[in-house]
Picture 1 (cartoon, one colour):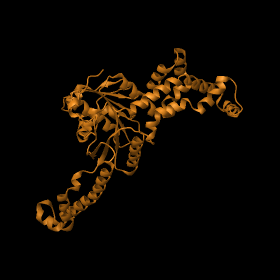
Picture 2: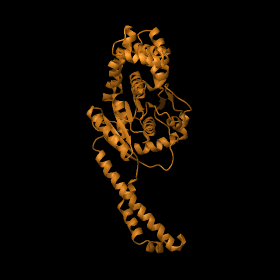
Picture 3: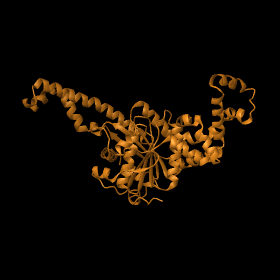
Picture 4: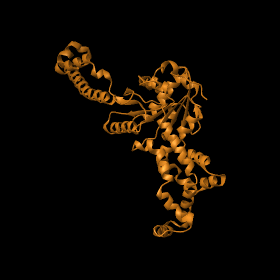
Length: 399
C-alpha cells in the first residue's frame, strides 16, 4: 500500500466532513479525482497541474493518467515516452522547476490496445479462449474503436490502479467526449452490450449452426459481399467474447461503484465560451442526478479580475472622455500629442469593452458556483505550458 500523504492530515483536515474550500483541500481529502470536460478547454493540462501540485504540497505517491493522443502531457512532464506502465517523473524535472516535492509524481498514458489485451487475459475462461480472441483478425482491427472503448477502458484502468493501493491519489484525465454522459455510462453500456439482443442475434447462426428465418437474408447477402471467412471471423469473435460475459458485467459494476465512492470526486474543466459551458453545465447536472460528487469546477482562460477594479474603470473613462487632456499631462516625451491622444482613447475604450465581458463572466461564475464545492478561475496565459515549471505555474492558480 502507498504511504498516506503527510500533508493530507493538515491541509485537508475537516475537508472530508464537509465541502472543501480549495482544490488543495479537495485533493487532500480524496483518493480519485476525475477531470472531465470538452476537448480543447485545457482539461489535460489542468489534470497534470493538479497532480503536480499534490505531489509537491501534499506528498505521497500521486499518479496522473491521461488518454490524450497528442501526448502533450508527456512533453510537459519531461517524459520521452510512456504507456500503460506508470513511470515516475524524474526528480531532475522538479529541481529544474525550482521545487523540492514532498512526494512522488507518476504518469501513465492509456494504451487502449494493451488494456483490452489485459482485460481479455483476465476474463477469458481458459487459455485457448484467450489466445483465440487475441489472434482473431476482427479483434486485432477493431479493439481501439470497440463501442467507444476509450471511455470504458479509462474507467477500467482507473479501477485496476485504485484497487492496487499503490497510489495515494490518482488523477484521471478523461477522453474528450461529444456527449459527456458517454463517460459516466461506459461501464453500464459495456455490460448492456454483452447482454444485448444484437450480439445474440449475430452469434446465434454460428453457435447453433441453424440460421433463423429472420437472419437468413442478411447472411446470404453478406456472404456474397464480404465472403464466408469474414462472417466466420465476426461470429467467432463475438461468440468468444460472450464467454467473458459474467466477468465483464461484474467488473463493470465494480467500476461503477468506484465512481460513486465517497473517496472519488469529479472536477469539471471548461471555458466560459457558450458550447463548452453548456456541456459543462449539462455534465454537472448529470453528476448530481446520479449522486456522484462534483468537487470542483475549473474555469479556464477567463479575463482577469483587474478589469473589474473600480479605480481602473475611472482611469479608462477619463482616457475616453478627455484623451487630449491626458496626452498633454503626459508630456511631449511620449510622442506627438494628437497621436498620443488617439492611442490613449483606444486603450480606454478597449478596457471598457473588455470590462463588459469580464462583468458577464463574473456573473456566470457566480451562477455556476452554486453547484460544486470549489470554483477556480484561471486567466489567459501569455505563453504555452510545455514543461513542469509551467504546470506548477498553472497549479499555483488552481491551488
